Image 1 (cartoon, rainbow over the protein chains, first blue to last red):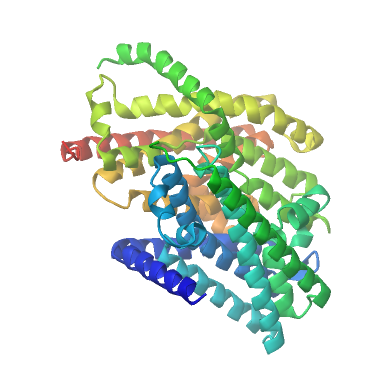
Image 2 (cartoon, chains in turn brown, cyan):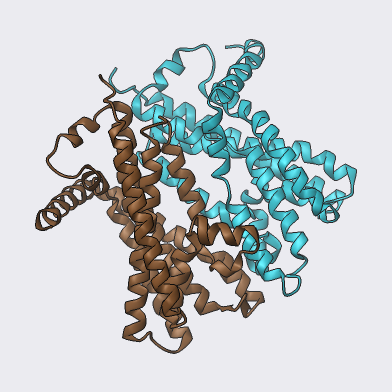
Length: 262
Length: 266
């Protein structure tokens, strides 16, 4: 366990140092991140210019969902996707060999291989959105609510990461899947709305099949103190099962890997 | 190269472009499915309109708007900016410069050749969906006729802006970042996320004179039968004026940039 942490720390330090070399890129990409947060907010601002609530969600409550969305999107595009895109490239060119011969778990190594540190702006933006939302609500969350939201956030991150690992596992069977990861990134945009927005078949898909809506809705409900304990525990159990499943698929897939050069 | 030779070579380029789109059909479909933002926005507005219409839009109105938006987006999409910046960075642009045809013309053939295939996939599906909201579509055949030059203008403007920003890679390293910024602003001001007439008056006034609405909102408005014939004609003129302007700017930037271009790895 201690060794695992040491590896993660070393990998993270290396990837952050690497990314920080490009200072102009840091500033430019940071400015772009701010622009995209603003673009994300525009539709909601327009909607709440005409309505005071949508499907039971008021403006500040909707902002909480959007805040989680901005934060998770930052993590997905700043940490999960870059690393896993690198894996796909490794598989295609055969350089995954160099990862596999290292005396550590391959999944761990590839998962923290590459970072885009400027996406930290997304987390800061999410923090601002939360602050504003709670100022509008006229109250702060209790310690218990923050704790529950934290647990839900961890679950959401784990699901996000597991889906990405599943997508990457496909790369062992089909070569061109980098755009599959982009497809997932674009489908993730669904998570910007609370799950109750969706009706009919879409509601089923985004709750049970691809639990995107829950990733942002549950943490937001937890912050509002509206998440039922049983629902929360169910979500945690489901998440753990899903993570175990993706780990299983990864280890089956990696057994199929034959270096591109052999 | 003479214009006549270019005209003669263009159909062959279109055929090879179409063939390569068919060859990579799985990738092609995945990229198409990545364009889902109009549907996500539709989910929100449909929920909002459940409690009554918003402005001029009922639930069916929103459905028609966003399905048309999706269709126009799919039919007018290009990717030249990514290819151009990459080829400039890697130096492979030199290969294109050797050929007896303007590289931008060749790019335009490759990008244009993908449109029919996208149409084959998108038009039937979206037509079925739009059938349910057919009351919301325009009834004036003249406006539907004007849709043809409007779509062509939208495609050309999209392509030329991409080519223009991509050409900037001859001067700058962060040309793709400029394009990202363009994408963000255009998502708001072209009506991609929210119909322009739902914005506050001040924003509408600004959006009215900028080029963004001609990329997307204008063809959609024609499909929904919103403008009068005279107004639509004026808008068409505005769109093609922007096309001419973009063509001129691209040409200037390209010529000046090429003079300072020296391929890497020579």
